[in-house]
Image (cartoon, rainbow, N blue to C red):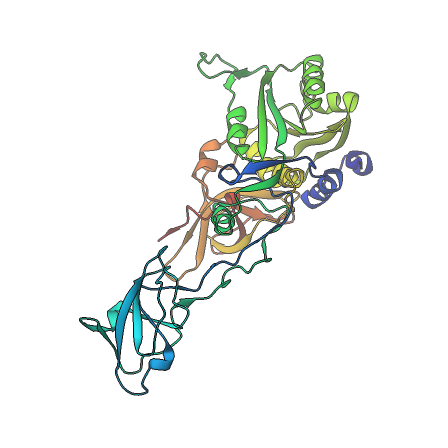
Length: 420
């Protein structure tokens, strides 16, 4: 691996260079397992899947109505047909349609071989068994053709695709009941710091509750991951080394929070240099500059900052792409949008900032964004209120109201955008 620190000395690495270094250092897990379709949500396919059937399997109706042959239509006149039976979903009409005949049909029911058209039930007049079709009735409508969705032999899902709920339905529609997936990525995480207090304990002066492990518990809640919480490790180099070396033996990746900065009690870099290898540990982003990336034998390591908002930002922008690659998913770029900012945003040039914002949309469809509150890397309340990042480039020296900014949805989920 490339030692970016050694190359750049005291310079900070750009996030682009950091991500490129991570991508070059990480390979996907190769082991696979077979899981039933019911347990496949969120897992990564290890091989492409092809359909062994046509879907739909039969020609069927897209509407409740009447099935008939378009050859019976009388141009510019009402057409009267005789109903001779019914085709239900799962119970096809067993006879043969003759000229001038039709069958009652329901959505999803198989069409008689002689029929090529369906008219909606609301458009006909019924007099006993006589079904009258209005003038200008069109033939060959409301039919679902064999293989209209998927043809036999078609690719249904490609390898390295993360299976969604929609994919479950798609795969089930072709009769697939189990899939080969990549094994789960084995992840261990822990917090460092003598100041950390467990929930349920009385908080003393100089202490803080350990929020980062709860953050990571949520951020790592993914079917692709097998996660181990190693607890809190004291600011002691030997304890840290013992923990990291032991965890590296049976995990693919270790994540720590805290101890990655330059203080006298920040030992992560020192420990990694002694028992593994460090690739870089300063990135030109805010929050989140102190970040270690390394490897202990075959196990990758991320040392994240201690401030909780920095944990969120570095996890989502740096660790998540690495985990995607480990899982076998192609690394993706976050979607960016342009919005008009209504807040004064303070910033000094030198680092790319991910300020927390609230995205909304006015009645004309224009995207608007405002600051969600104080931007300190310890201010979780503003991060909780946010639904987007306001991405300010390295050279930016601040934003005034009315200026446009680049925004990035948090987790790429548009679930909190409101209208004025």
